Image 1: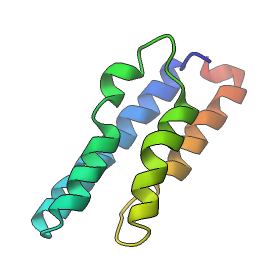
Image 2: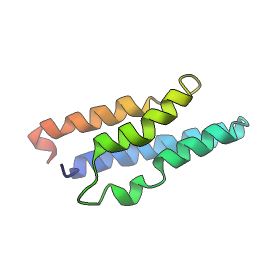
Image 3: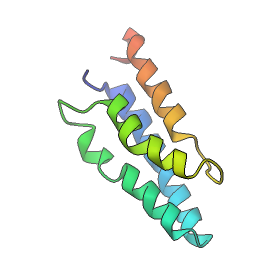
Image 4: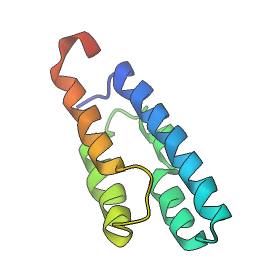
Length: 95
């Protein structure tokens, strides 16, 4: 299902927090975790505009692995945030 503009706005906010966390991880000497988080998000800015982009797939394929690998020591629960963004689809005012 196509991503709405309201969902894209929320995804941009989520990327903002991911960039902040990546910077924090780098400063904390956690380069591998920073790289894994960057890897999870790096295609999102271009992919969220594609007709076949699926938020569910983004969460399940990219974020779930990262959060499983690092269950502690993260600032955001990105998978939970993506699920909230997916739920926005059900509100017609978001289309």
